[in-house]
Length: 176
Image 1 (cartoon, rainbow, N blue to C red):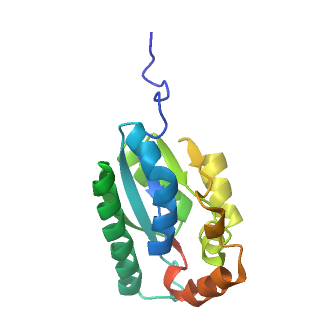
Image 2 (image 1 turned 135 degrees about the vertical axis):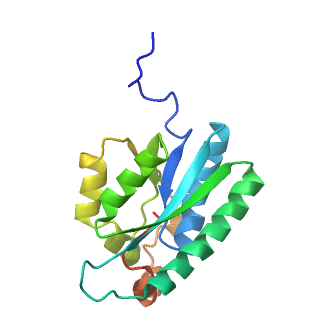
């Protein structure tokens, strides 16, 4: 007998996937898309425009929305080619983890899924507080998938330099 509160048989049947940029979406899709397709799943991909809560924002809302839309275009294209149904969500909030968990609940996600990398923008995005909140305070499962290609893990100096250049654009976004 299955209880209503029983976990889904596959955590990747309805994943909620945050992404921070086009590059982040590319790497994340490399890790998650085949798994979602194999599960016969559908996914929601989200980007959070983090508001500073009264303080000046590092980038304009329009810039951040543009970054999100570019990432969403890639997501729609790749998901369509893989035969995976996808919805995109542009979110706004001062608490990234809380915004993600709340939105994941709204779409009845089976898990929050992301791929960590060593880029500075990723660290800024998933600071210790956000990562702790997602992993320890979320009442949804959190799945961390490995990067499919170790060369894209952001540990080389060039990737870190590129990430530093993009900090203004990507700071405070979870799309991831």
